[in-house]
Image 1: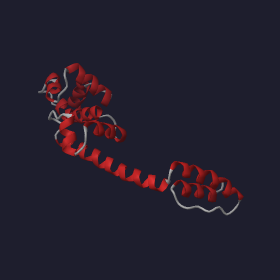
Image 2: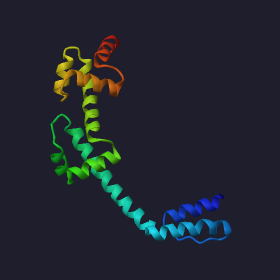
Image 3: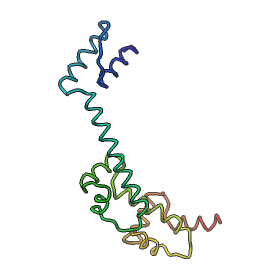
Image 4: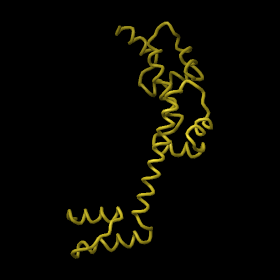
Length: 163
């Protein structure tokens, strides 16, 4: 396919009006124009999708900001959804599509916050797990290892030797 034909395809897919200059372009234009007529105007769809994507990104950004500033509090999904002006279902669906699951995001925040505490040998690992909302020391260790590829006690031993 020639460069002109590629440009023509891109223009057709983005909703611009296209005119074929030669046979090669006509062979490309007719299927594209037929498919866009049956699906509706792609230009309108693209504008609508961009608008929704922008709103969705704003919703996710606001949710991330709320959880980042208050990750240590036990906020319910209903509270968060009300704060960002959304339903729980819509928030979960949009967040998962853009960022990943809400549970995974919150767990990553809590695990990153534990990094400083793990390096302090005066605080026990079960206390750290409880303080940051993990149900047990083993759950905390498993999540920590999955996220950072090292168990907290090994990180603690390494931190002692690095000081």
